[in-house]
Length: 76
Image 1: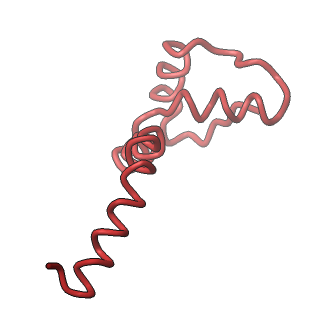
Image 2: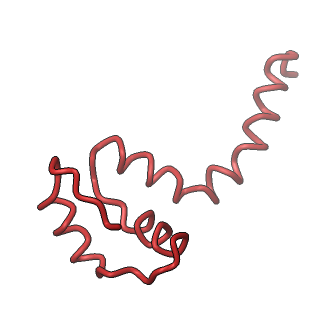
C-alpha cells in the first residue's frame, strides 16, 4: 500500500497523463524553442490571431526562418 506521498504522486500522474498525451503539441513547441527550430504551427496560429491568412507555406516558412536567423526579421 503506497504511503501518503506515494498516493499524491499517483494522483498527480493520473491527472497529468491525459494532459501529457493530449498536450503533445505543447511539448513539440517547447522542444522546438529549446533547439531553435522553426514552429510553423505557432506561425499559423499567430496569423489567425492577427486576422490574416498565412503568407507562406510550411516549406517557405522554414526556408525564411533559417535565412533570417539572427537578423531579427518578423512576419508582420
